[in-house]
Length: 251
Image 1 (tube, rainbow, N blue to C red):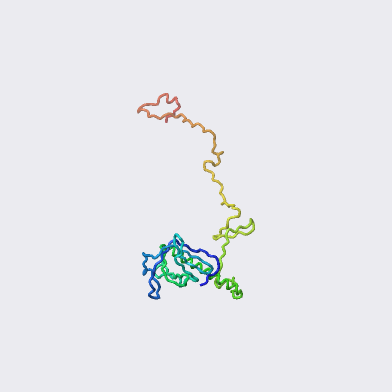
Image 2: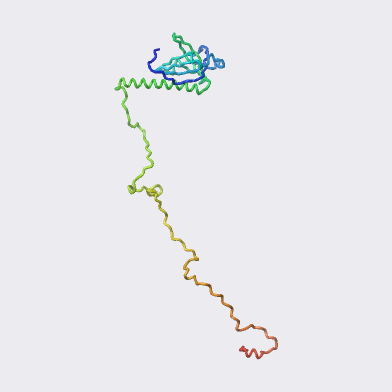
């Protein structure tokens, strides 16, 4: 397969991957990682995904020296070069090829599920970009074929516009009544207070001039009883001359 001219770009690097020898596929149902010897990988090293134009290369290299162990060349994904197993998301079957054109199938495994997710997404993003570039190239070659841009609303489509913090100039509009019969607050932050009732005068302060009589007059002293005290006269006694002289009238 001819390589497209262009610069190389590294789109994914994983420091540790495992390679397994896999048995031939017995049926068309797909490969199963449970059939491999997962505790005995045939090789462990580093993986790189490099894009060059529209082609992606998966390279397996030694961790220390960087020597190439195997590589796969892809022009589409999903495809026959990389295939996921049916019983796990961490293992794949990859078709490798040497310079002479010979190819073989090996098992590729990741110790971490997040690494296998990154591997899958990197390939998807690359070939998604390849597809978009191809569509743009076709539109540039045949501009009349490109569909016209339709900016109209579809049937039943609506649009919602939210306008907030709208301010009007002072005196530049009518007040709009709010629900419940209330008016919105006046502009400028002025506050309208409720009518105040006149202060109540305490009962003790009503018409002080009428109750203020000055210093209190001395209490009236009891007058002596001019009639004297009535006492019982002893039986058989007669009024004395003193009684007649004091002005008492006897009846």
